[in-house]
Length: 373
Ligand code: SAM
Image (cartoon, rainbow, N blue to C red; front, side, top):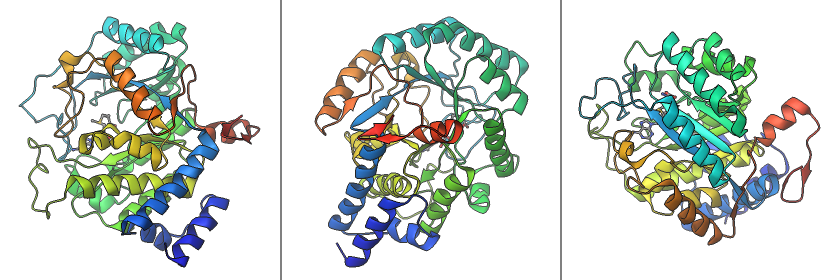
């Protein structure tokens, strides 16, 4: 490791938000196995300091693939006719929430394509009220909605909301979406979520066509400026049935895509310290141990898929989605073993609230050895 990198890593470990944009970009660009490993080790040390050697689990329910949006990269975009559309019933979602509680995850994510209608708003409210007695930390990831809708879902029991900005560069965003999709609205939605009192999460895709290290550095600054509590980001993986499925970019190997995704996790941890960072399933699509590597690079959350296997093929956002045929029980055992192999354990029975959220809302949470008090 060079002296410069050593000094920089020592400095950022002492104080959050200490990196300038050029320094963020330089860290993202580090090359060479030793230097990359030093980056991951420094980020992992901060993960252990703030979150302990434990990983929070949130079972993810892919509640439906009906989507009004037409994002150029996404397999469930509205105009993709090569998949059958589905929507889980309220009973099915409640049953999966009960399964999640039995698994001991204490936390649940409900994600779907984007639908804005009174009927859908009421449907989600009903589901949230029915699962409230399970006392799970519920994250919603249901796209852009009116502030009033976010408020109703919060009142019905949701605690967190994940809405990726996808990229903090509006010009790059415009190349990834039709003109009807607004980057500004997405930012406004993040602000609305914050006003409604959610733990707010955002994130980006890494390795997008035309994206630079400066864009990614700006993404991390965006997380800091929006003061978000959770980050869910992962590699962009082309889906063949989308406009970006066959782009004219130079080919990227799985190794390059994975390494970039891991570097984003590491540099985000180094800059923000106390936020929750998820090791995205897309990492596992690039390497079987992708999510564990995400943890070793600074992530502290994993979202195992608990959706019934019969729906999983219809919710393929990108090519090569893993665990298409593995039910929730198999995922649980597999993850326990995989985490044990890297000296980590599953944080059963805890909702895994973001320490950053607790600090900014209570002002009294403190750091103890290996995690938040
Ligand atoms: N509709 C909600 C929304 O827009 O936030 C949630 C569902 S959306 C399918 C979830 C995330 O999938 C998106 O935010 C996007 O980052 C990710 N995604 C979609 N296509 C992808 C691809 N080809 N590679 C990697 N991630 C992708």
